[in-house]
Every structure is written in structure tokens, then in C-alpha cells.
Image (cartoon, rainbow, N blue to C red):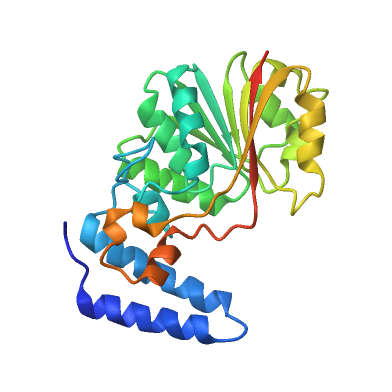
Length: 256
């Protein structure tokens, strides 16, 4: 296994130690360390995902790729991803595709499927296009700006998979009274109750009669599970795995 540059590692550990010693801790100061931490990991291990359902995906175009590289990002969903891929859907609609890692991952694992990626931020779609190019997947994902209910409904087809992470807009989009096609779709959604209080209960109410529902929440990450972090101070190892999110819940909704 390759080793980290000792001088770069020591400098980064010192910077992070100082950031943690401040009260209150300055989030911007911690965030400024992340690009250098990613560069340290990338120099040692490359920028291709090392494990998980999207192993082999080049994530070097992403702003903060550490947890993706290690195969730890949203670890809670990996078994669900494998089950969705094994079902071999004909279409995947990714709402809130961001920098494109899931759109690219599903495109690479499902070469015959149609992949549609929505985001409301043009810069995110530009980032997604870069990631797709880096992985030789240009043209495999239909990137679309927006996703109001009409756009979303038009993208659905019977039996398609919906991946949704849209910062609270799930309360608007995941409404089978507005979008009847949802009753025949498999849906994996991140619920943002900290943005829209009660959205989890609302989704359960809307889909409890049409779908079997599984739910999961985020769990702590243990740097000891990732051998690439063995040569790194524990605090930096935890930072590499940090997804900078509050307590979260996800739902997998499968048509009955």
C-alpha cells in the first residue's frame, strides 16, 4: 500500500488540530482543509472508487471526493443500490443528481438502461457532465435542468427507478395524487425533515397502501474499516469519512 507524503500529512494534521481547538469551531476553516485532504488521498491511492456498488468509478472531478473514493459515502444505501441494479430497470430518474456520481454509477452498472438526471443548479449539471466525461459515459445520461412536478412526471415510465435527493422538494414531487405514475415506480428517497418538518410522515402516509416501505438512517463511520486510512491520524480519518450531514433518514418504496 502506498504511503502518504509525511510532510503534507503532518501539515494537514496541524491545521486540523488548530481548527478543532477553536471555540466555536469554524466550519469554513474545516471545509478549507477538505480539498487538501482529498489531494493527499488521491496522490496516494488515485481517484477511482475503491469499493462499494460503484467501484471503479473515477470521482476525481468531484469537489470533495474522499468518502466516495473510499466507498463509504452513504454506506447505508449500498445494499439497496445492489438490489435496484439486480432488478435491471429500463429507466432510472435521478432527481437532485448533483455532481453526477449516482447517475454515472447507475449508467456504468446498467449499460442498457436509460438514465435521466435532474438538478436545479446549472453548475451542478456542468460538474455532472465533467464526471461523465471522465468515465467515458458522455451521452449515457440525459441531464436536465429543473424538475417541477410536470417535468418529473413526464420523465417517469412504468417500473422505473427514482433516486431522489432534492433538499426537501420531495414533499412536492413525491405526490401520487399529482404524479400517478409514481404508484408503479420504485423510489429511493432521502427525507429532509430538518428542512421540511414532518416530510417523512407525509411520505409514509402517501405510499403506505401502494408500496412496501423500508427505512434506514445514518450510522457512524469507523476509519478502522478502511485500510487506506491506517497511516493517517484518527481525527483526519474521521474527517475523510465525514459527510457533513445531520441525522438523516432514507426510504426505499417498492410497488406492491
